[in-house]
Image (cartoon, rainbow, N blue to C red; front, side):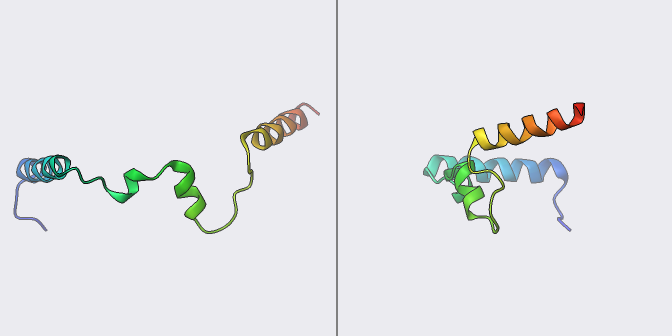
Amino acid sequence: MSRLPPSERLRLAALILSDLTQQGETPVALSRTAIELLEEMPGNRLFKTSEEADEYLSRERDSWDS
């Protein structure tokens, strides 16, 4: 458990983030797009395109009316 009170921990975090920003460093997670992150995950995506997802959702909605 930290010995710093919450306000001091926040101040420390802000100083660290400020320092990283000034150095021009970008965390790896922020330098990738959402698509890149999804492509790295194990398993396949159910839909390859947004059109496929829209078509599936449309069929599902139509089945509710039946």
